[in-house]
Length: 220
Image (cartoon, rainbow, N blue to C red; front, side):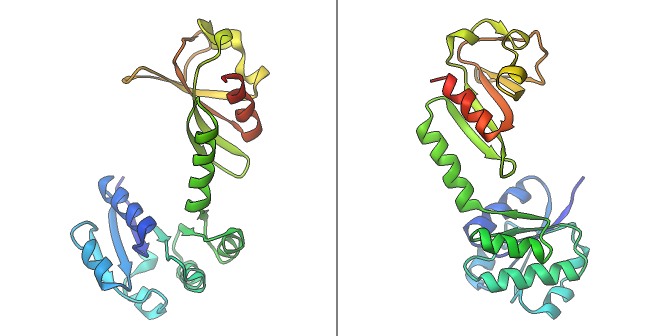
């Protein structure tokens, strides 16, 4: 179902979010107080508005409360991001995502009404760190503070040509195999217990970060 999104702040992160939503065929209102940025996204977003998002009257005139989801991606101005998030919440926006500069900023955003707080710089650094220190971890997505979704290449001889049931990932590693990527085009979603693991398979694994790290260490 097509949803309506308002993206407030068209910096690098906000612009990327805007482009991805449009490519997913969603309706997007892009708001920024920089004329150059607004002009850049005029032919990308469904609608663009040059406005000061800290002006409550402006947000109300744009019908912000009628959007399914508001995404506050204001850059360095922490005070502005908190104020806009609070105003969106008070207007009755059903779902608000806000970008945080640091942990303290994130806590305040949660307290004033953000349903989801994202830390793009921190999360990217965390993912990059894992990729640089592991030769088998292909990608790393943090689901929460403690749990992650990880792609790990099978490089452990004791796993070769054995079934998921024989390896017993849940008992011995406390993780769940969500899918197996084999080659370029073959994706096995929700693999059954009798699915055989082959050398070079890529496992899509969900689990606690400590358990994921333990499994990754086995692959080295």
